[in-house]
Length: 305
Ligand code: PMP
Image 1 (cartoon, rainbow, N blue to C red):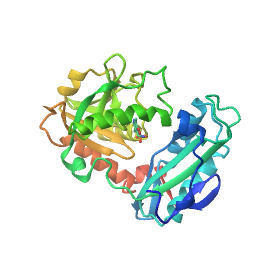
Image 2 (spheres, protein in one colour):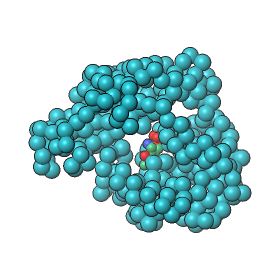
Image 3 (cartoon, rainbow, N blue to C red):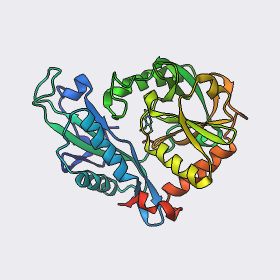
């Protein structure tokens, strides 16, 4: 991934992709205190546009605040950096990765005295859980790893360190032949996927775990709320048990990378008809209309680059 042409924005400058390097004594590399975002740009009639750029950038600043890191750029500067990176890499669509980290001035757990850095990279990236997954649905395994408790790591920060838990869960599930993991919270209630929020459909209503289960406040999750309001479908945020998930009519994951990915099987138990459900398909199609600029009601969620 490092050996390619292109530009990466680092601390206010566009740097050649191959030269975008940091020192091995970088504090974040040792102790994991850093935050990032995952953002997507889509092709629209007006050219490439970044979906919900402001919300993603605000969440990056909120993550940094929770981690007691002060990003040395304004919100506007970080939004402009993301636009610049899409243009500089000649992308019509793609995935954007802003990341803030602590420098290599000194080591020791205390980050005092370490500089806060920021970078933004962008590259072409297709369906995170596969094109086939978007159409047919994926197979999911409940993880043996518990999702973070709300007072162990900070679950509303998209913190670098939170993802060791996601990596363990994803590796366990995929090495067992599944596509993705579903994690439960410390009390055994459904929390989220390794990199996705989860939704269930039951009797024409939609259910998703409330955020006290340690799930990230996903921007796609919020977009689904808007889509459901438009469709006249009620969304209930509540504690969800594992057996409720088994008995759902339909289920799907959401995320910037995963978009709206149906779940056809959980722990080898078929969900509903074992394929993409009718309501899931409706929501997925509404989602793709919005991100591609085909629904004027949400045009303010798209920032042309
Ligand atoms: N939960 C986790 C753990 C994630 O990594 C993501 C992806 N950012 C999400 C949920 C979904 O968030 P969003 O819709 O904002 O991408």
